[in-house]
Image 1 (cartoon, helix red, strand yellow):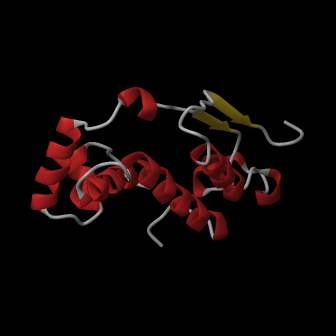
Image 2: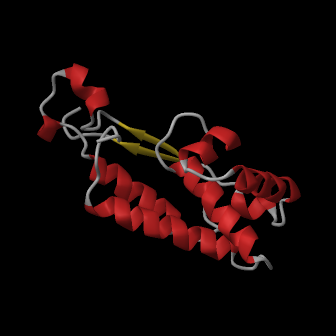
Length: 143
């Protein structure tokens, strides 16, 4: 398995919410290619992968050099209002049951499960574009 961990059910829900969010923001764009590029770019940012700059992201998503040029032009033109898009949330979980937290020696059931983090991301994606949550702290009971 290539991913660090697998989130079974909620990952599909989160992916669907990402698509809905991007469709809501990019839906008014006049060209189909613009809408496709918007979704591709957001997928590159939120899906697992190392570097988030454009070229490595599109290589990871197995896109062509022509698509790189298309997305680069799309981003440079920025056909939307940035104040409606730029929202960030710091998600601060405690120890999450992933290989990254194996060094703690904690039992799996004592840690926060990845599904909990995926659910929080899904909730954030379902918010109105006019709402903002600057930070979410997820603590495990007993810590």
